[in-house]
Length: 122
Image 1: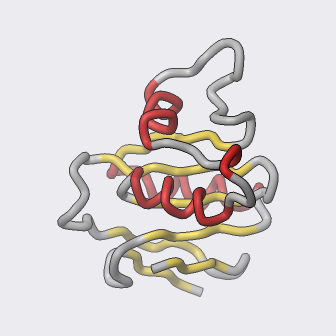
Image 2: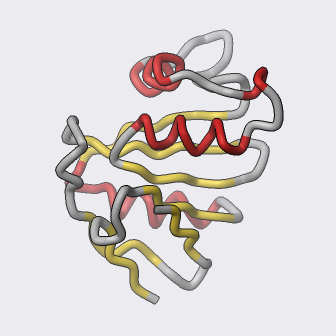
């Protein structure tokens, strides 16, 4: 499920997806489209990115995004393909971090396998 949030909407709470393996949430920053993407599963972000790819050179792998989420390369500044950056966020402050970061982006996207994971308010 892909849910695009308008500027007047905000993320109120998040419920853990039973398929998520880690106690963390991932925020993906798209430098080209000026988007912020939130997902509990990194493979869902990879799937979404690869759907946006116009040719095979723009696709990413799970291992590449995992590496950018856990360490920052000095050469690229932590960006994958100089376009995508992954920020790992802890559960206790994910709603605050997401709502604070999303004001800097044109579009905010929530990715999930079901629509019950996120509670959004106007």
